[in-house]
Length: 229
Image 1 (tube, one colour):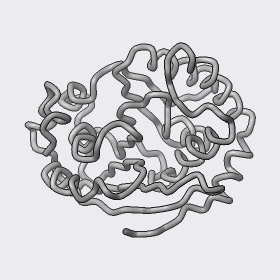
Image 2 (cartoon, rainbow, N blue to C red; image 1 turned 45 degrees about the horizontal axis):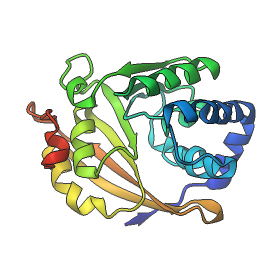
Image 3 (cartoon, rainbow, N blue to C red; image 1 turned 90 degrees about the vertical axis):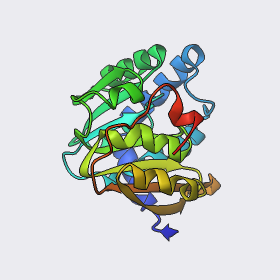
Image 4 (cartoon, rainbow, N blue to C red; image 1 turned 180 degrees about the horizontal axis):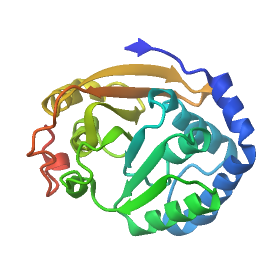
Protein backbone atom coordinates (compact mmCIF):
# COMPACT_ATOMS: atom_id res chain seq x y z
CA UNK A 1 0.00 0.00 0.00
CA UNK A 2 1.11 3.50 -0.77
CA UNK A 3 0.70 5.74 2.27
CA UNK A 4 0.24 9.32 1.23
CA UNK A 5 -1.72 10.96 3.99
CA UNK A 6 -3.77 13.96 2.91
CA UNK A 7 -2.95 17.37 4.36
CA UNK A 8 -5.84 17.50 6.79
CA UNK A 9 -4.89 20.92 8.15
CA UNK A 10 -5.25 22.33 4.64
CA UNK A 11 -8.53 20.48 4.07
CA UNK A 12 -9.94 21.74 7.37
CA UNK A 13 -8.92 25.27 6.38
CA UNK A 14 -10.81 24.89 3.10
CA UNK A 15 -13.93 23.83 4.98
CA UNK A 16 -13.53 26.77 7.36
CA UNK A 17 -13.38 29.17 4.41
CA UNK A 18 -16.78 27.85 3.26
CA UNK A 19 -18.15 27.28 6.76
CA UNK A 20 -21.58 28.78 6.07
CA UNK A 21 -22.11 26.54 3.04
CA UNK A 22 -20.94 23.39 4.81
CA UNK A 23 -23.20 24.25 7.75
CA UNK A 24 -26.15 24.70 5.39
CA UNK A 25 -25.34 21.37 3.76
CA UNK A 26 -25.34 19.73 7.18
CA UNK A 27 -28.72 21.27 8.03
CA UNK A 28 -30.20 20.02 4.75
CA UNK A 29 -28.77 16.55 5.35
CA UNK A 30 -30.40 16.32 8.77
CA UNK A 31 -33.67 17.85 7.56
CA UNK A 32 -34.10 15.39 4.70
CA UNK A 33 -32.56 12.36 6.37
CA UNK A 34 -35.72 11.41 8.25
CA UNK A 35 -37.68 11.26 5.00
CA UNK A 36 -35.10 9.90 2.58
CA UNK A 37 -32.81 7.74 4.77
CA UNK A 38 -29.67 9.40 3.45
CA UNK A 39 -27.14 8.49 6.14
CA UNK A 40 -26.78 6.72 9.48
CA UNK A 41 -24.21 9.35 10.49
CA UNK A 42 -25.97 12.42 11.88
CA UNK A 43 -23.89 13.87 14.74
CA UNK A 44 -22.27 17.08 13.55
CA UNK A 45 -18.69 16.13 14.43
CA UNK A 46 -19.07 12.72 12.79
CA UNK A 47 -20.54 14.25 9.64
CA UNK A 48 -17.67 16.76 9.58
CA UNK A 49 -15.00 14.04 9.75
CA UNK A 50 -16.59 10.99 8.12
CA UNK A 51 -18.45 12.77 5.33
CA UNK A 52 -17.06 16.25 4.70
CA UNK A 53 -13.38 15.77 5.50
CA UNK A 54 -13.20 12.27 4.07
CA UNK A 55 -14.83 13.43 0.83
CA UNK A 56 -12.17 16.08 0.35
CA UNK A 57 -9.27 13.63 0.63
CA UNK A 58 -9.59 12.78 -3.05
CA UNK A 59 -10.13 16.30 -4.38
CA UNK A 60 -6.46 16.74 -5.31
CA UNK A 61 -6.68 13.72 -7.62
CA UNK A 62 -9.08 15.56 -9.95
CA UNK A 63 -7.34 17.67 -12.57
CA UNK A 64 -8.33 21.28 -13.06
CA UNK A 65 -11.61 21.79 -14.95
CA UNK A 66 -12.30 18.05 -15.10
CA UNK A 67 -15.67 16.67 -16.10
CA UNK A 68 -16.54 14.33 -13.22
CA UNK A 69 -19.33 11.77 -12.93
CA UNK A 70 -20.31 10.33 -9.57
CA UNK A 71 -21.93 6.90 -9.52
CA UNK A 72 -24.43 6.16 -6.76
CA UNK A 73 -24.46 9.73 -5.42
CA UNK A 74 -26.80 9.03 -2.50
CA UNK A 75 -26.50 12.06 -0.23
CA UNK A 76 -23.83 13.68 -2.40
CA UNK A 77 -20.61 12.32 -0.92
CA UNK A 78 -17.94 12.89 -2.05
CA UNK A 79 -19.19 15.09 -4.92
CA UNK A 80 -20.85 18.02 -3.15
CA UNK A 81 -18.13 18.72 -0.53
CA UNK A 82 -15.56 18.61 -3.35
CA UNK A 83 -17.64 20.97 -5.48
CA UNK A 84 -17.87 23.42 -2.57
CA UNK A 85 -14.08 23.84 -2.62
CA UNK A 86 -13.40 23.09 -6.32
CA UNK A 87 -15.74 25.26 -8.37
CA UNK A 88 -13.59 24.62 -11.47
CA UNK A 89 -15.00 21.08 -11.70
CA UNK A 90 -18.27 20.10 -13.36
CA UNK A 91 -20.25 17.19 -11.94
CA UNK A 92 -22.85 14.75 -13.18
CA UNK A 93 -24.45 12.95 -10.23
CA UNK A 94 -25.94 9.57 -11.16
CA UNK A 95 -28.43 8.14 -8.66
CA UNK A 96 -31.06 5.45 -9.23
CA UNK A 97 -33.36 6.39 -6.33
CA UNK A 98 -35.79 9.19 -7.10
CA UNK A 99 -36.04 10.52 -3.55
CA UNK A 100 -32.28 10.84 -3.27
CA UNK A 101 -32.22 12.67 -6.60
CA UNK A 102 -34.79 15.09 -5.17
CA UNK A 103 -32.51 15.75 -2.20
CA UNK A 104 -29.48 16.24 -4.45
CA UNK A 105 -31.31 18.76 -6.63
CA UNK A 106 -32.48 20.63 -3.53
CA UNK A 107 -28.95 20.69 -2.10
CA UNK A 108 -27.47 21.94 -5.38
CA UNK A 109 -30.03 24.75 -5.50
CA UNK A 110 -29.79 25.69 -1.82
CA UNK A 111 -25.99 25.76 -1.92
CA UNK A 112 -25.98 27.89 -5.06
CA UNK A 113 -23.88 25.41 -7.02
CA UNK A 114 -23.45 25.69 -10.78
CA UNK A 115 -22.05 23.09 -13.13
CA UNK A 116 -23.81 20.23 -11.33
CA UNK A 117 -26.49 18.05 -12.93
CA UNK A 118 -28.42 15.18 -11.36
CA UNK A 119 -29.42 12.16 -13.45
CA UNK A 120 -31.98 9.66 -12.16
CA UNK A 121 -30.73 6.48 -13.83
CA UNK A 122 -29.02 3.15 -13.27
CA UNK A 123 -25.30 3.19 -13.96
CA UNK A 124 -25.33 -0.11 -15.83
CA UNK A 125 -27.80 1.36 -18.34
CA UNK A 126 -26.26 4.83 -18.58
CA UNK A 127 -22.80 3.35 -19.08
CA UNK A 128 -23.88 2.06 -22.49
CA UNK A 129 -25.34 5.40 -23.59
CA UNK A 130 -23.03 7.02 -26.21
CA UNK A 131 -23.70 10.42 -24.60
CA UNK A 132 -22.10 9.19 -21.35
CA UNK A 133 -19.78 6.35 -22.27
CA UNK A 134 -16.10 7.32 -21.99
CA UNK A 135 -17.03 11.02 -21.89
CA UNK A 136 -15.63 11.93 -18.46
CA UNK A 137 -12.19 12.84 -17.17
CA UNK A 138 -12.91 11.13 -13.86
CA UNK A 139 -15.50 8.98 -12.15
CA UNK A 140 -15.87 8.89 -8.38
CA UNK A 141 -17.83 6.63 -6.04
CA UNK A 142 -18.12 6.05 -2.32
CA UNK A 143 -19.80 3.20 -0.42
CA UNK A 144 -21.68 1.84 -3.43
CA UNK A 145 -20.56 -1.77 -4.02
CA UNK A 146 -17.55 -4.11 -3.69
CA UNK A 147 -14.69 -2.97 -5.90
CA UNK A 148 -15.02 -5.60 -8.64
CA UNK A 149 -18.69 -4.73 -9.14
CA UNK A 150 -18.10 -1.02 -8.69
CA UNK A 151 -15.38 -0.97 -11.34
CA UNK A 152 -17.77 -2.47 -13.88
CA UNK A 153 -20.32 0.24 -13.12
CA UNK A 154 -17.77 3.04 -13.23
CA UNK A 155 -15.02 2.33 -15.75
CA UNK A 156 -17.24 2.59 -18.85
CA UNK A 157 -17.78 6.31 -18.10
CA UNK A 158 -14.08 7.24 -18.05
CA UNK A 159 -12.19 8.37 -21.13
CA UNK A 160 -8.87 6.70 -21.88
CA UNK A 161 -6.30 8.64 -19.88
CA UNK A 162 -8.83 9.49 -17.18
CA UNK A 163 -9.25 8.05 -13.70
CA UNK A 164 -11.66 6.23 -11.41
CA UNK A 165 -11.39 7.03 -7.69
CA UNK A 166 -13.13 4.81 -5.13
CA UNK A 167 -13.40 5.77 -1.46
CA UNK A 168 -13.05 2.59 0.62
CA UNK A 169 -12.62 1.57 4.23
CA UNK A 170 -9.60 -0.60 3.46
CA UNK A 171 -7.51 -1.87 0.57
CA UNK A 172 -8.65 -5.48 1.05
CA UNK A 173 -11.00 -5.38 -1.94
CA UNK A 174 -8.18 -4.54 -4.31
CA UNK A 175 -6.96 -8.14 -4.40
CA UNK A 176 -10.31 -9.36 -5.75
CA UNK A 177 -10.85 -6.20 -7.79
CA UNK A 178 -7.58 -6.10 -9.74
CA UNK A 179 -8.75 -8.62 -12.35
CA UNK A 180 -11.93 -6.67 -13.03
CA UNK A 181 -10.01 -3.40 -13.29
CA UNK A 182 -7.56 -4.93 -15.78
CA UNK A 183 -10.36 -6.40 -17.92
CA UNK A 184 -12.08 -3.00 -17.96
CA UNK A 185 -8.94 -1.22 -19.13
CA UNK A 186 -7.25 0.12 -16.01
CA UNK A 187 -4.45 -0.21 -13.48
CA UNK A 188 -4.85 0.72 -9.82
CA UNK A 189 -2.85 2.11 -6.91
CA UNK A 190 -3.78 2.65 -3.27
CA UNK A 191 -3.56 5.67 -0.98
CA UNK A 192 -4.10 4.87 2.69
CA UNK A 193 -4.73 7.40 5.45
CA UNK A 194 -6.17 7.88 8.95
CA UNK A 195 -8.90 10.42 9.55
CA UNK A 196 -8.07 12.88 12.37
CA UNK A 197 -9.38 12.47 15.93
CA UNK A 198 -9.49 8.69 15.65
CA UNK A 199 -12.30 8.59 13.11
CA UNK A 200 -10.84 5.56 11.39
CA UNK A 201 -8.65 4.22 8.61
CA UNK A 202 -9.63 4.93 5.03
CA UNK A 203 -8.38 4.12 1.55
CA UNK A 204 -8.57 5.69 -1.87
CA UNK A 205 -8.23 3.19 -4.70
CA UNK A 206 -7.16 5.16 -7.75
CA UNK A 207 -7.49 3.50 -11.15
CA UNK A 208 -5.95 5.00 -14.29
CA UNK A 209 -7.65 4.04 -17.54
CA UNK A 210 -5.11 2.79 -20.07
CA UNK A 211 -7.39 1.43 -22.82
CA UNK A 212 -11.02 1.38 -23.90
CA UNK A 213 -13.47 -0.66 -21.86
CA UNK A 214 -14.73 -3.61 -23.96
CA UNK A 215 -18.19 -2.95 -25.41
CA UNK A 216 -19.88 -5.80 -23.49
CA UNK A 217 -19.37 -4.02 -20.15
CA UNK A 218 -21.32 -3.19 -18.07
CA UNK A 219 -23.23 -6.44 -18.57
CA UNK A 220 -26.48 -5.29 -16.92
CA UNK A 221 -29.34 -7.34 -15.44
CA UNK A 222 -27.58 -7.39 -12.08
CA UNK A 223 -24.64 -9.46 -13.33
CA UNK A 224 -22.17 -6.88 -12.00
CA UNK A 225 -23.16 -7.79 -8.43
CA UNK A 226 -24.27 -11.40 -8.84
CA UNK A 227 -21.25 -12.53 -10.84
CA UNK A 228 -18.37 -10.04 -10.43
CA UNK A 229 -15.54 -10.17 -12.95
